[in-house]
Image: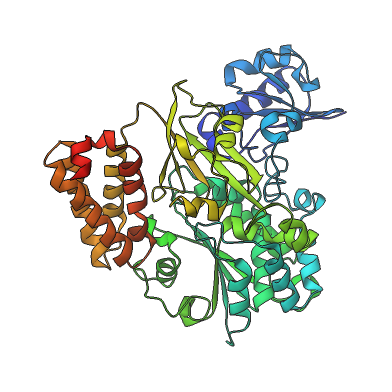
Length: 517
């Protein structure tokens, strides 16, 4: 019986030695005259255990990790190719608590398959959703997505079905599908994991979207800092064309959809949909005024669906198993699952896909294992660099769009960055203001000038200068940014700044007397 081993090709795993481990395993197997089949799979998302090496046994896949080159010889000595005991032995991969307690819908294949193997994808239910979509009317496809309750996973949480329905019912000789893959928030990596670990699910989701609304051209707007994803996407797109899943006659249906990848140039503001479209058109990435909405007049003035990677990658399972199946996960108006990315000061960092409704505390301790430093967790920033800082008193908030909004916080793209009690929240708030100033497109005055004045005021506050004057000034600047900015970059910068100020006033040098002023 041939021996099958799995070593991730995910860029995070590669950055900590996965390529070197794979070469060492191949070399050691050759030296010992052992024939192996080495599969480069995506990451399971257990990043504290990477590089995670798996071996296929009669009982299932067994895991060893984190494996370094220096461990390879001892693994062979321990007969790990048959699941032998070793200090790095973790047991059956699927039985690891971190994985077993998740609800993996969007990430069902990631870490299991060779990412660019179309055969692997099809064997694990790939393209079943598209097969169903080809036998339905456009309205039926849009209804399934609407019934599922899927909302935008990029941060705005706008109902996907409403956006698709608007594009479907807007007459035009040309329509477009854009995947916003400009994943630029700190602490986020779920988009990258999908594109590197299961690119076909994104391609299938975009193809279904195109058929649903009558769009024949799609673009994946990919951040330039993702070279591994770029290679994986282009490889998968080529294979999809060759197999008839893209092109002028998809699977003999007579329906057309074409897809290509376009690279961004590193501007954070191009994660905003209108500046992204400006960039795609070859212009500088400046935010557009709304209306008109992109669904009516988007790319090149045509009706355009703009969805995030996770939104589009959620579509195939909805069309495969039905909108009701997906809707049965979650709570309230937050339906389905959300891939949460654990980063910062945690023992177990990585990706967790669960249904909406779990509390932040459960996520931090049951999955994250508490702080890596062993110190109390002081604050958690959810939703990227524009997300609020949540204090311990808000850790029992359920992961739900409305529950977070009630606390003046956002779930955003699901990035979770953790800080222990050594963090200075005033310094972090100052960083958020400086980030906004650096990344502003400059089109609107509140964002362009307000953020610059903001971090200047923060410098004075950190120096303890005239707090009675500068704290109210900071709040006034935040109010201007919040209410006067053209897009969410300026409009959300007050979230981290004011949450830090409100929940951690002591880090700003505030006393009761100053607070009263």
